[in-house]
Amino acid sequence: MLKKNLVKAFSEQVNAEYYSAYLYLVMSAYADRAGFKGAANWLFVQVQEETAHGTHMYRHILERGADPAFADIKTPPSNFRGIKDIFDKVLEHERLVTERINNLASLALRENDHASYNFIMWYVNEQTEEEAGVGDILAKIALADKNPGLLFTLDAELGNRTFVDPFPRTQAD
Ligand SMILES: [Fe+2]
Ligand SMILES: [Fe+2]
Image (cartoon, rainbow, N blue to C red):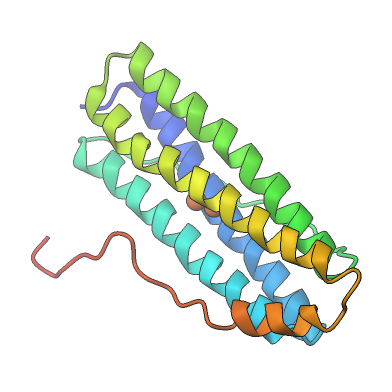
């Protein structure tokens, strides 16, 4: 059985993951309309990943015999100033998520809930990957400053990203 404060913290994180998905959906629309179809694709893969995270955490609450709590998902900002601004904000957002995940891990340890701690460790590693991946994209955007043609190469690269379900589940699960 999951302790009350962990049910609350995990439920809030489910909401935060769905907010992330919604934020990336807004960003994907912006990139699409700005002609960066590859970046729009990359961001849409983020939408699917964040949705998978939210659902995975929701299942953790249920599997531990508790009722998840639901709340409004706030409206993400939509006032972007180009593709660099988008990825700056992705990095900024992912850093905040990393902080939330670390807080969740600390809480699980404080409550001596090693199953939850083990569960959240996957996200600790995931956040390292997320921040590194976005950092790489921002480094390439910085290179395109002197050579704008590189932006098209980068966009094509971002267009190749495909969604791989991190938690595939069969009917029998
Ligand atoms: Fe996430
Ligand atoms: Fe993320």
